[in-house]
Image 1 (cartoon, rainbow, N blue to C red):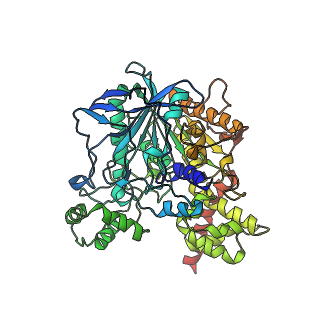
Image 2: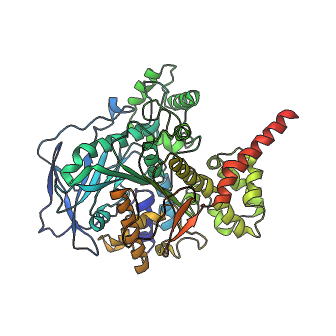
Image 3: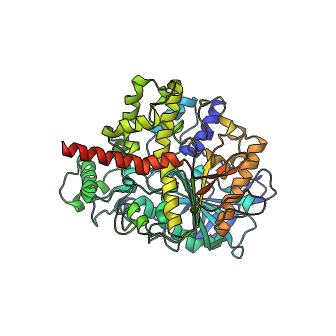
Length: 565
């Protein structure tokens, strides 16, 4: 059972150890073929539990030239056409990423699942489409952007066959450059940065020009993603490059909004590039020389670099091309692509997965007062607050705790609030205030598959909603990879697939037989998604007020007092 649960977890979080996919039909059924803009593709045909529909899957479809050699640290280019029939039956290699996190979860679950390959040549996507779809079908298109902190993950961790079968849509899952290769910027035109975001734009351009070949409608494209993928979808709502390439956006457990999520300080950007150059033996005051030197390094160098230098991390930069200003400035100026936005978070985002990755396993036994400072320092970079202000956070979240278990739970909520809840509410408010359709949710149901394998205090954790949005319980895969949800959980999964797909069709998640989901307006109503969903109002309003008003005011007052003494 341990290896199965490892597969389940890694399927949604890492995409590095197991690629759970539906079983193809018997060999008697011919493999489907499609003529795309760049050449013929041969894929596989799948069945899906609970439906009579079959799905065609085309995997490893190139949407850009390999970003290697002179194309490393450069804008992606359209792929070359190919002759003959290209085999599109296998998952593509994942973009270059380290194995540290997968190693942690292998140890936790005693997993023996072999690792999937990684390569710098990774700009591929997977397409899942109903087998009876053709160019005249013009089905809604849902483009999945995977999560993983912009340092890990892959397109193949999201099997779109279930969503395609149940909701009659075309699902596309994409990959993009990660880590240093996806973000390095010299702060000038030699290497402006945002390579991962630009890969996503290139994938959307491919969808715009090619998805009709697979039965999709290029005028009805919804981008959706989780964690880093959710942040990505929210970034495209702010980018002039992405305008017109999609028509609705869904952000699960991640948005760009607060200062620090994107760097707009050129000196800081250049200092990061110079540090990478120095470590790589590319010391130079000249950006062109640095980039030329780094392009000559083997891909193994960057794997080693990201393994050793964990503090080198750039999420995105204001490059004047993909992002013209910081997200906060764009949002305040209401410079938002005018499209519907559905977004939300889970009610225990920092409950188990991220603490394990951060080696905070001692929290399982509670949080003693003596270890509070150690725990605060461990998550300090996530809090966006200087250590001098930690006493204010302790007073708000920890001082009233009656025991170590309650203190631990409050600590986990504190980190989850600033990382996921507050950004979601803030971003929803900005989108609403711009006069744009907005829908907010909080997911509250912990999947039953984790009972006994993760602590009982963990509620709906980071990534938990993906099992339900993707319909993973309906995968036709080997027994060892089956995700066995209860019948009521399967009903919840069908409901969420319907809500997401309805929003993709209409820009509104409401429909016949679905729970009422009010728009996020001045009343700030949201949908609490659970086995019995209900409408809530002003999500964690007291905590949001603390982070957005009370804390900044107290820090400002403290700074004034220091200057006056």
